[in-house]
Length: 146
Image (cartoon, rainbow, N blue to C red; front, side):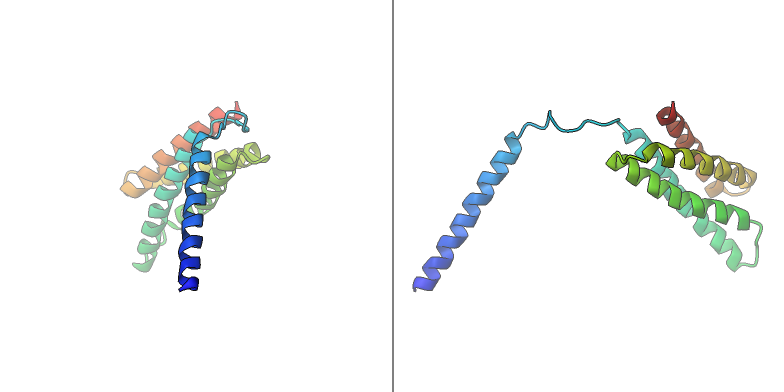
């Protein structure tokens, strides 16, 4: 019986501590914390570009499976863009010391990807959407780099 009472008491104590910590966190003043640049628009644009580049890459791979390699360069460019956008959104989210350098690379990769996707935009909607996303990402990169 004593063991059971001890466990019930320990559980009650943990529950009380958790409620106290939650109350303390809710009233904690965050105004003194580091407030870096607002990269939210860049993060959103990079993540959207990454998502649409992945859809474009999938489409390219599907055309390869049918024996059509006309989208080979497009597949290469969107693959690079996927990785660069991932690095950009992560660095911006953390306000990393090297964010602007990565944003510079993202803009360059975006311009290359945009040029390639634009070549196929009239024939493939997924390429058009990827090109539009690249353009939005480039625009947000420019805002950060100014």
